[in-house]
Picture 1 (cartoon, helix red, strand yellow):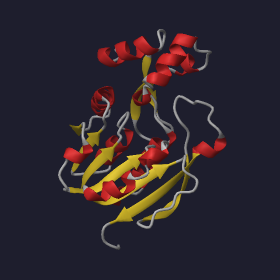
Picture 2 (picture 1 turned 90 degrees about the vertical axis):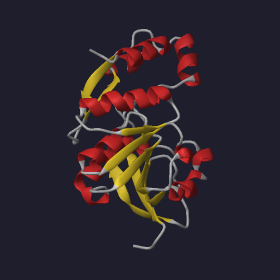
Picture 3 (picture 1 turned 60 degrees about the horizontal axis):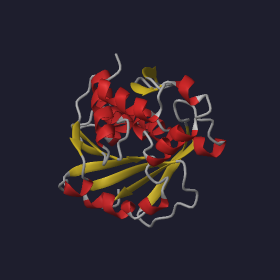
Length: 219
């Protein structure tokens, strides 16, 4: 049965939408996501207005989050035995992947209480334990790694690139939106292919996810 709080919140935005357990492709994880059928139709004006005013980010697995999860599964040394914070956690996909890959501690951080609720049910679904935080800046400077997936879609968030290293020794960023990414502390690690689930038929360019790494101390 879908988690009641999240299903009610989604129903208030999109009346017929349902949360379903979705297996993620090429990734041994699953999430409660909005059913694909409800994304394959025209929304009425009221639904469109509500979605734009309060988008349910937590009910999607965004391409950058999926790419990050796959990357951590293939390169677990990034998180093994480390204290990790998943910034702008959304569904919790990156943090859950970190926990699965052997992180000592993972904190899912998001301003949206519904996102944190989604992280809780998705963590339970994948049989991992997470900590939870609503305020990144209230956290102590104690993390080994800050994970950042699909946060830079709003260019107003770019100044956060400096802030991440105020709470963590390193930062790992996955982004498919910023094509002129340039920051003196961040170096590119490569480009991965992923898509948002359910599939929003986004332009192909948004399926190219770039990875960046920053560290307080040169590696």
